[in-house]
Image (cartoon, rainbow, N blue to C red):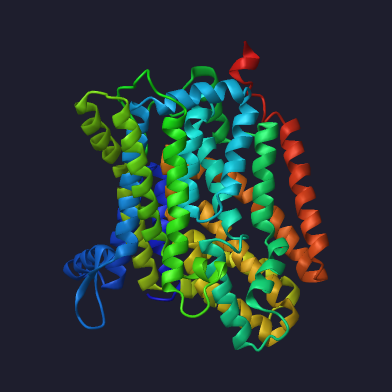
Amino acid sequence: MENTIYSLIPPLLALLMVALTRKVLLSLGTGILVGAFMLNNFDILASFTQIFEIVRDLFITQNDAGAWEVNTWNVFILLFLLILGIMTSLIAIAGGSRAFGEWAIKKVKTRVGAQILTIVLGIIIFIDDYFNSLAVGNVSRPLTDRHRISRAKLAYYIDSTAAPVCVISPVSSWGAYIIGLIGGILATHEVAGIGALEAFVKMIPMNIYALSALLLVFATALWNINLFSMKTHEERAVNEGHVLNPDNKAVPGQQIGLPESDKGKVGDLIWPIVALIVGTVAAMLYTGAQATEGNVTLLSMFENTDVAKSLVYGGLFGLTVTIVLFLMKKLPGKHFGTGIWKGIQSMLPAIYILIFAWVIIAIIDEIGTGKYLAGIVDDNINIAFLPVLLFLISGIMAFATGTSWGTFGVMLPIAGEIAAATDISYILPVLAAVLAGSVFGDHCSPISDTTILSSTGAGSNHIDHVMTQLPYALLAAVISSVGFLIIGFTQSVTLSLLVSLVLVIIVAFILKKMNFTSIESPREQN
């Protein structure tokens, strides 16, 4: 069943159950079990043994010498989530979140302003998508809550700025990884006269999905476009003051029943976040420099940085600043213990989902879903259709596997091979199409770690985020497909990008006129 159409069963089953039941762990667990049974010819003992080994390998792995060692990437990501949860709780108890919300409501007087500020933060914090999702969410949440902006819409803004910005930024963990892959592809096919960094920069205007998604985010904020279920969430937030669906259980990052000090200041929230950002960036540069052999440059530091370790270092620095500010409030000692415990509790739902997602991704990799989808590409088709086909296939692959980076690793070499075998002048457009499609599929996938962390950062129900973001992602993808068709037939990057962005504006304007924007702000209602 490996590497065949049957390899689609586990991810599609999990995705279908997510849509029907809205129970993430149950759906992912079902996909995991079915995938394991298929891999082991429905031998129950062997299937559960394999699942156990996959879970074990998430935390400890055996090296070539046979010794066991900690899987630092996964452990550090989970540890960073716990640190962030504790920081958030202590900041809330110290009164920092409330103080920032009260200050921001005076300075940012409209819902539109609150949304634009969130989007701008998502764009300027482009170092890493994990860090972006969690940091922007924690800064913006007090402000958007005060303006009665639903958590689902906040999660959409976070998710739809994080990956699209990182994938077009050369100075980011994404950019460094992609440039490394591109360099190998160009060398393999002996493409002369262009370096990997130059190729990456030239591909930025070809990444039509990323740019269309970013423009759509701004249009959504400015014109208050609420597609399908997003309108329900926004109406509830505006009319009832519930930024979350009160019928849902506790969501990742949600702080319930915390005492709040009336001595809080804006700095009690700002300084820990500043410390988190500064500490993380400094740690990324440090770990990157330590791992670089030869000449150390800014690009080489980001290319070799240990993102997970840097997040923990930055998180510990931010947590230290948080604790110092907390202790200065001279609050009852039990509040400190409450903050730590509640912070840990608030992140457990996200950790459970992330672990289940990692397991099903490993199952999907074993069963060969990605290889099957990659094999669909046929190099005998009209070269003009290659960009749009690679965009769509990469999107499906990232959606099914839940990983844009994994899709990069599989599809970029394939795209390079096809271009080299047909028309090498198409190599940059087809590589850009793979990048764009990978981000699109990642945006739609409930098992994507970036999607999970965007829900966590926003404090949104995960399935609410997936279902509300999906229409926006599909809209940007349809428009991007038109752009990739244009670039395939004309090879004009300018025309392709111009048509795509104009289409985004036209469609957004039509949606505005079609009464997708009937929600008024509380201030306007009064």
